[in-house]
Image 1: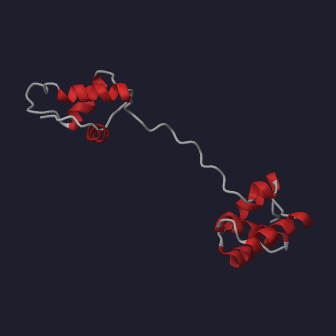
Image 2 (image 1 turned 90 degrees about the vertical axis):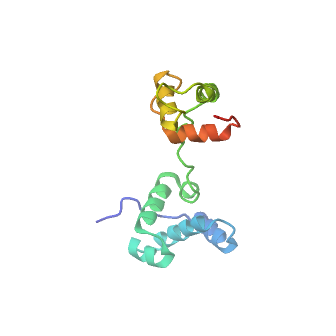
Image 3 (image 1 turned 120 degrees about the horizontal axis):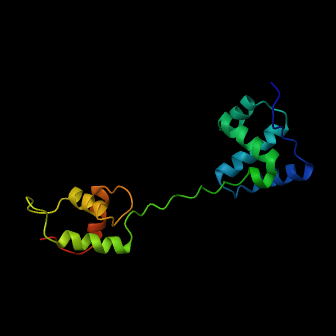
Amino acid sequence: MAKRYVVALEPRERQELERRLRAGRASARVLARARVLLKCDDGLTDEEVVEAVGVSVGTVERVRKRFCQGGVDAALPDRPPPPRPHKRRIDGEAEARLVTLACSTPPDGRERWTLELLADRMVRLKFVDGPLSGQTVRRVLKKTSSSRG
């Protein structure tokens, strides 16, 4: 099966990659990607490149694809990680309400608040959006210096 992404380096690109390898100042992953490009340009198969460079077949395929789509500058550096969702479930206002609730009188039939009871009450009173775990309540209360009795 013919390769979809074929590496064909220009002489100046090859010289730049060889210069980077000689300098050895980049991260190991960047240097490995440079070796992959050079070996692919020499006409080696993916399996031969894997043996020569010590990377996986997937890495060889991704480097070839990134090179064909954006050149050497796109193939060598690490891509930035994807943005992470906002993980904070309890903001400052909800934290204050949680501390107030934890210091209040526990529900009837209970001697004290449990973390799960506090989490359920926070959700029921709509102090937070969505579900809330007892462990989240524990982490928030641990950061405060309040005493629950």
